[in-house]
Image 1 (spheres, helix red, strand yellow):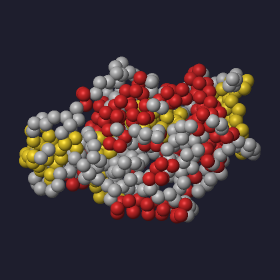
Image 2 (cartoon, one colour):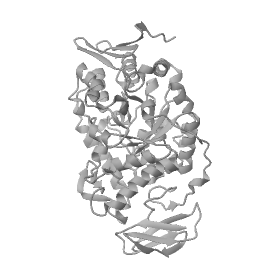
Image 3 (tube, rainbow, N blue to C red):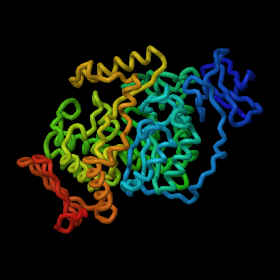
Image 4 (cartoon, rainbow, N blue to C red):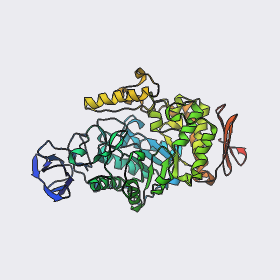
Length: 519
């Protein structure tokens, strides 16, 4: 088989295959290649200028983690059973965001399969998986990935992810994967040894930006676009969620987000792409992405429910803000069925010092209010794992960096970040501690007892109402009445009326002028 690697910074490249070292030939444009007799399962790496072997930048499998050798993978060896599968359009989706490592006690792709019946019974029809590309250590959020083509080894690797997607499709669930193209993780990032994947021309909150528009950026763009297509094609994914696109700097045309979206739409069947950006941006949607997260809905609702006004919550606080989050995008020409709405997500929970969910901040009545507003809204609704039963477990930020310097910097950086929010250093759990990760696992005994069981039933019934009422589809009719004194909001969508009282925390859901019969 032919091995190829882009390494313009090397004067000499060797293929390490088993115990053999084979010289690679320069093929122009910074590419190197060599032919060798190799089979799936063989471990290999690349030696640059005689140094120790490094993982393949396009490694499909890192069984020993970010510092180990790559392993050859035969994608055709997996036997799919989802022939003819067609997932829902984004506008018809009900998303369920999950973190593989804490979703179940097993923390793997395989153990997640065991809980798909719960997701189906809830009424969701798509799962959104937090980043699963190889990152350092055994546990983490995944946003510090470095081997962007390889499913994380601790989750079950390539075969595990394929089995999960295949099982989801068998359950009628689409699968969306969160991918990160705005930065690379701090440990195991060997890409810079090969070529200019990063640039000093632009900077992001994580340091140097990915090189999408500078010298030698063509192969970097190719790397990212082909990576996105590989996830969609090789793992039968239905869509991608692009993390923090505001930190993707690209002055070229087409913008990398536009190019990636167009290529995803060319697949058969077409796949959808959702982007994250702090403010609804019509220009972003004009690039061809199918949807965007709607942070304004979350922020305005969160402040009304909790009274918190620190940091990015400071501009919010009135019922009019919530009404604007619902009505404003339409006035900007943004269809509401292209926005993903939520009351909670991994960021808004995990970026709190002690990872409190709304269930730790609110009474049951206000939790029901939040659910009714989001699940009956004209946006594409999304729930974060455990939200549906008011999980009592936190979702903390955790990591498992093995480089002591990176580990210390991560812990110190977390403390500095939360001090800016007013939290005391002693209250910030150490992200490197195993206990921080373990505390974040869902407790699956909770849905069987009150008050969790009642809240789960509320979510199930709201989603059943959404399915049975055409006007409740994303993008359907919407009218909003807002009052500041008393603080109330009424959302009307065809025959359904949702009355929210932020003074008492009460909510009433009516259909055709009568209270909905939940019995």
